[in-house]
Length: 219
Image (cartoon, rainbow, N blue to C red; front, side, top):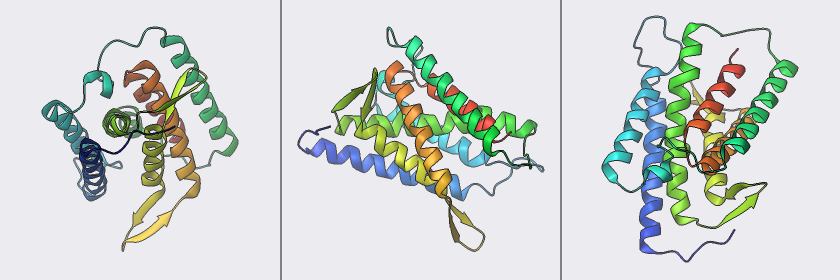
């Protein structure tokens, strides 16, 4: 996967990429303690603010097109069947992992269903696959065809960052906890979501996959 020579525009895009990634990280972590209702268990505030930040960037910067972010109604012609097959296969794999290694404890309730099945998946996909992946694709333009799906440095880098953000957790007292299994699973999730988005040129399959993955994992 070769890359074209670095240009001034490439450096600008990479700078925008890192600023947005850092903003997402700070806001997601920093706002996690703000409760919107008394019994809140999940980070509604952080996810909502970062979703609004992402949408604001898309529609105000004009740096990315709807096709590049996947924020459009139509799918790329001929992509529906392979996208559905990959989505269902990945979800089936997640279900198999869950039943093989399920814990006796469960955090599955109405709030979990609403959060994991909607805001969490939508926010993360808009940021990581809608914006960050699209920005990387402008710099790393070479792609490899893998069973009809496009694999690129943008897919790998955005997925790796997604995995790391899910596996590195700050506990009370700024104690850093590293969960290697979660990093690997989230990296895999990012790869699948990115492939779905790239093949269909639509963010919806990635959101649906992410929501189903979350719901199974938090059952």
